[in-house]
Every structure is written in structure tokens, then in C-alpha cells.
Length: 172
DNA sequence: CCCTGATTCGC
DNA sequence: GCGAATCAGG
Image 1 (cartoon, rainbow, N blue to C red):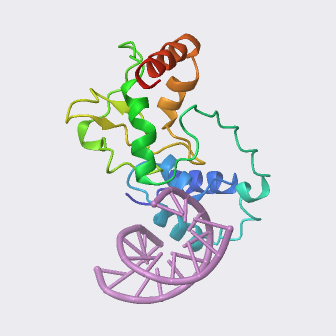
Image 2 (image 1 turned 180 degrees about the vertical axis):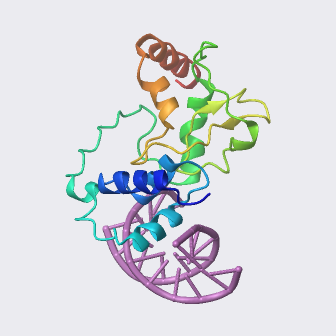
Image 3 (image 1 turned 45 degrees about the vertical axis):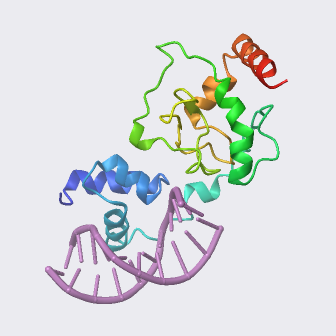
């Protein structure tokens, strides 16, 4: 990869528009790294950008995060185990077209689960194969990754009711 | 930890 | 000139 005229032009435009170096790098495609972009910006003398756009822009208000019945007061791993095993057992069944396949290698056991990870249960909770999704949980410490948050909170009226029912049956 | 830009320095 | 590695900061 080299700095062709087109590339430089695009770099100028995107950087001037206020994109971050990594965003510009992504636009320029694989092969151009963030470092490459920053280096070029300096060589071009573009480094004095009147503040970054993101710095000018007032921070967007934090999206309100839905609360989950079982999600309160969870902080340590022990808590996680206690809090989410019931949840796991009562996990809703997803329709095949709702299903997202997470490779086993990316899933995590309950011991590997961290607060920053998606706690969506996957597989049979009574099986040694049982894992959690393990994806990056949503910003602000939400319990699920973006996808599973959607599944958990969005369509869910009746599914959730069913799940809660199941939960109370088993853990009343 | 995720991210940001800045700087250095071997190539 | 180039950009990975590193630094300093949010």
C-alpha cells in the first residue's frame, strides 16, 4: 500500500471532516493502519485540525439501559454465578432465524465470564458444553452484547413472560 | 479496557 | 517518506 493521490485526497477529506485516525484508516481499507494515517497527517501538516469533530460535538446523551429482573447488585464472579444460573436455565428458545451462531472458541464458561462480557447463556445448562456468549457487553456495563440485548429486551413481551414463569416455577 | 493523537526512529 | 512501537492522555 502506498499513498496514491486518491488516497491522500480521501485522507484529507475524511480527516478534515473530523473522522478519527482509526476511522479514516478503516475507510481507506485494510493495509492502511491508524498509525499510517497519523503519520501521514503529520507529514502533510494537517495535524492542526481545529479540535476533533467528536471533541466539538457535545457528547450524545447516554442511552437509557433497560433493567433486568435478575441483574441487580451483581459485581463479583460469585455473584455472577449465583445470579445468572437461573437465568440460564430459563433462557428463551430463539427461532432459528433469530439465532446468531457464536463459535465455541469465543464462548466463555461461567468461570471465565467477566462483567464486560455478554452473559447470554448458550446451550444446555446441564451440559459441560454450556457456555455464555462472551461477546463485548454493551457500553456502560449492560449484561448483554448488542445482539442479545436486542433479543432480550425488544420483541420480548410474551417471551419474557414465559421465561419469568418458567423461572418462578423452578425457583419459587 | 476501550479509545484518542503525538512522537520516535529504524527502515 | 513511511509506519510500528511506544507514549500520554480521556
